[in-house]
Amino acid sequence: MTDVGAVWSVKTSNVAFDIYAEGGMLRNVRFFLPDGRLLTPFYDAPWLQDGSAVAKTHSVLDHLGSEFVCLPFGGDYPAESTRVPAWRKALEKNQLGANDRQMSGDVHGHSAASHWHLVALTNNSVSIGIDYPETSPIAKVVRTVVAPGDEAALAFEVRIIARRPFKGPFGVHPNFALAGAPGTLKVRPGPFSMGMVHPSLDIAAITCGAPGAQFSSIQSVPAREGPPIDLSRLPLPGKTEEIVMLCGIDGAIALDNHVEKVSYTVSWDAALLPCAMLWVSNGGRSDSPWNGRNMCLGVEPIASAFDLGETASQNPNPISESGFSTDIEVTPERDFVFAYKVSVDAMG
Image 1 (spheres, helix red, strand yellow):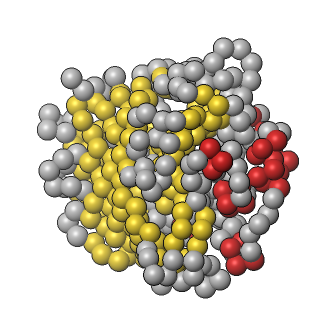
Image 2 (cartoon, rainbow, N blue to C red):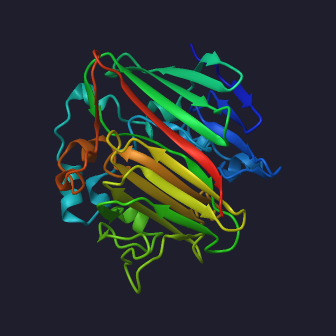
């Protein structure tokens, strides 16, 4: 049973937030600092806020917000969406069985496109659940968002329960607003082993990054033309869309807002999700509902081959062949439990 249209709210002395039944979406996050300031660092889709007429897509775009669960992560891309040979091969090879293919369909999975129900509501936490179709190897997912009592932070837990063994891509999708003048937000990832640019030509049409290129610093991401791109200072000048993967990262990415004089840190167990995808949506998407106005940064801990879907993630691909897992495994005997945190700290 789902709670269609329901919203569950929490407010403490340090943080307030809403959880929507649609997509299990986190929205309207507010942090209250000891000095009296109110901070709203997270993103909510502009077409949901300004009343724009949007044709229902029956997907995550209908309610895109601040943070959500992606199982499976991404959506299947066709092989012809890339000219990078290794990625084309990963997308062409189909070793998946019929039962596994039942997980495909919705971009970012059933969890992001369907309705959740309430499990528990307390003064400082919300737990919600979603049942997967009987054809899926996943039985249900339960997600909990907690406002810790002693700090401006949010703590998240995702529990995945299987009815049959499942192996596939998974991740979480916190989105931060990109506002202010170019370069006012500094992105500081922890140490990582390898960076890679998204290989898709669909993305390349609105991006400056060289599809499939590797890099060692987000300050120097290879471009299709001209000098390297510096993704450490956002927003970027002009309109663009950049998607990169940080593989073998240590499980922390900090965002320093030099206008607000605060730092936001996303931290997680990298032994479970060894990579992070950075989605820099910098006004580059011109089609509806984006309309050239979408400004956000996704800081997404994942075990996935970008957002290319189950085929690329489960088949050998340039990320997994470099030693970084692009899927998780869940069995009926053992739930998969993933926890992470977003914290706020004043900058000295």
